[in-house]
Structures are given as C-alpha cells and as structure tokens.
Length: 146
Image (cartoon, rainbow, N blue to C red; front, side, top):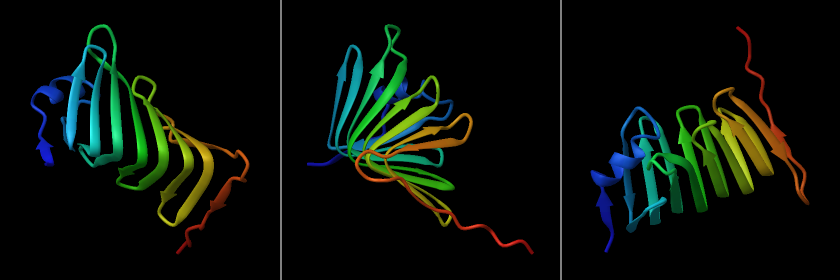
C-alpha cells in the first residue's frame, strides 16, 4: 500500500537542507542514525524544486544535519527553468553541487545537454559535461533579438 508522508518527523531533519520546508512521498521511509532512506516512487518537493527517483538516501552528519542526497533509479530533478534526468544523482548540499550519472540529460528552455556525467554547480549556475564511451551532445538554440 502506498502512503504519503507529509513529513512531520522527516521534515525535522530534511528542512535543515533548505530554508523552505520539504514535503515528501514514498512507499517506505526508514530512519537510521546517519541517514534517512526513502524507497519506492520517491518525490521530494521544496518550493518549486522537485526530486523524483526510485530511491533517495539523505546522509546526515554527527549533528543530524543533512550533508548529501543520493538518488538512484529513474532520477528526475525539476526546477522552474531546468529539468534534469539520469540514473544516478548525488547532491552535495553544502556546496550546492549536483552530479548526474548514467544517461544524464539537462534541458533548459529549448536547449539540451546530454552526457554520461553532468556536474551542475547550483551556486554558480554552471554545467560541466563528461563523455564516457559516447560523446557529449548539445543542442543550443539562440534566442531571437527583437
């Protein structure tokens, strides 16, 4: 049975990630001393940002503060102007860096970036792509000036 978690207890931990509260949904939730594990159709929402995946693990430091989020399986991360997709994502919460691996793709407006690995620095708004056996693929559409 699928149940929704509008996280009273989990919000205590995960709201430390950002100033805005986080709401979440998953088929199951497990708390451990150093991590929170969401499994099954996971959806975490904070403001206008949404993270979806098959599984999300939030790692906690000694004080119980989140330091990293690891999402696996059909990972989708949505922001108002950007969509990201991959099989694996690691989000360093302190440095605001997201690493997407495995058929990574980022879409922004009509622009597209595809690679085996994409590093997204949220603080600086930069993307860095790395190919493995395949090449990095981009589509950039310049806006028309009026």
